[in-house]
Length: 294
Ligand code: GUN
Figure (cartoon, rainbow, N blue to C red):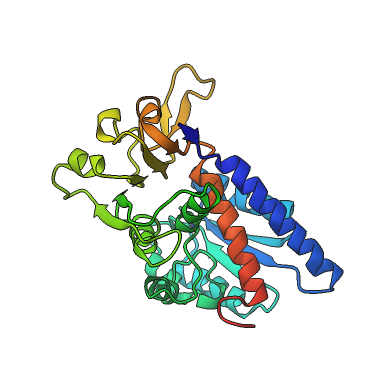
C-alpha cells in the first residue's frame, strides 16, 4: 500500500508556482492576485480561507481577504462580487461556501464573472468542463486529477465508483474521470443516498472516490483488493484521547481499508491540501489568460 501524499504533492506544486512567479517578476509581468470573500464566522470556513491566503503568500501571489459579517445582505454581497468582477488587478476570486441561510448561493455563484471563477463553480465553467472545453475546473476534482497524474496511476478502462453527487465534488469528478484522455477513460458509477446495495457497488471499484461527508463510512469489506482509494471527507469527530477533544476523520475507515489498497489518501494530508494547490494553479491560469484569453 502506498500513501498518496497530498502534503508532498501540494508543496511540489507550490514550489513550481513560486518559480513561475519569480520568472514573471523578472520579466516585469503581472503578479497573480486572488481575492476571497468570507461571510460570517463558520469555523471550518475560517480555517480553509486562512489556508488559501497563506498559500498565496507562499507562492508569491497577491491576495485580498474580504470579511463580511454574518448579517450581510445578499445585495451587499452581490455588490462586493461586482466590485471584484470589475477590479482589473484581481485575476480570480472565490466566495467561500457555505453562505448564511438568508443568502442564495446560486445567485451569488451566477454573479461571478466566469473568467474570474477560479473555483470553477459557475455553470459556464461547469458546462465547458462537461463538454471538454477549456474551463476552470473545480478545485477538489482538479486536485484529485493531479494526485492520479503525479503518481502515474493508470485510469484507462478502470471502473471508478464515486460516492456522493455534490455539485462541487461528486458530479464533476465523475464527469472528469469519464472524459477521453489521461487521467480519464474510466467507466464511472456515481452513487448517492438512493443507491441500492452501496457496499456491492463500492466492491466493483478499481478507483473509489469517497465524497459523502459521513465519517469513516466506507468499511474494509467494501473495498476490492488493490483498489485506489481517494478520500475527500473532512469530518470533525469526538476523540477523548486528543487535547482538543476532537479529530479529523475522512469518509473512509482508514485503519480497516488501507491494508486492502494499492494506493490511498490519508486524512488529513491528502485531498484537502490538493484543493488549495489546485486553486493556486487556477489563479495563475486566470492571470495568464490561459482559459479565456487576456
Ligand atoms: N466550501 C467547501 N469547499 C469549497 C471550495 O472549494 N470553495 C469554496 N469557495 N467554498 C468551499
